[in-house]
Amino acid sequence: MKNILFDYMTRLTSLSEEEKQAIVNEIHIDEFKKGTVLFRQGEVPTKCYFILKGCIRQYSIDEEGREITSNFYTEEQAIAIINHHKLDKSSDYTIACVEDSVVVVGDLDTEKDMYTKYTQLELMTRQMIEGSFSQVKAEFAAFIASSPEERFKTLLMKRPSLVDRVPQHQLASFLGMTPESLSRIKKRIHRDNN
Image (cartoon, rainbow, N blue to C red; front, side, top):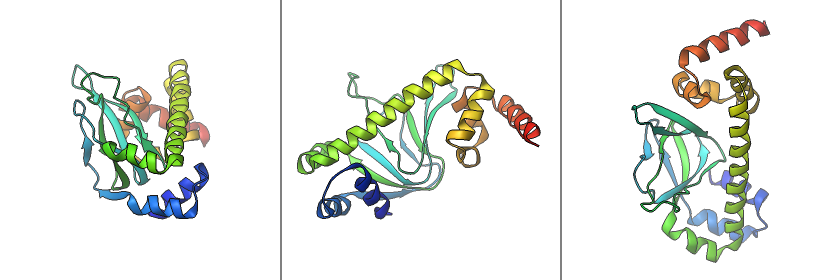
């Protein structure tokens, strides 16, 4: 599994082979079972995550007690913990494994030490966060302007594996519709394609 991270660093940095190997040797990789909660909404996160294998969901509970799915993270995606702007530093989301997952687990307290030691690592992390932020902005703008059916078609084009990897009610929440509406849309698209 560490070779996935090694390849990722090769694509995004100019670190030497020795530096990449040293980083890979220092990191901690953990395996989590499906259903494991990495942290809950309201808790102060102390770790950051990079998915090597599996699928992890980000969701929040609204005032009426409904789970609202806001993202799914899969292979080669980082879960950025950006809550330093809040006074209490608590998370607005719960992060939980949808599948058995293999994840690089970083300690937020030691992250700065790693950046001091390997400046290219900080650049790589910043590029990952900037890329993710740009993608989220674009997806949100498209989400607002599109119909539920268009959202599902976009998902089929950009992240088709999610359809088979996550429960339908979570996928429906992510797409901003009910599971029943998602089921009707899937049937209509299937019928139109045949």
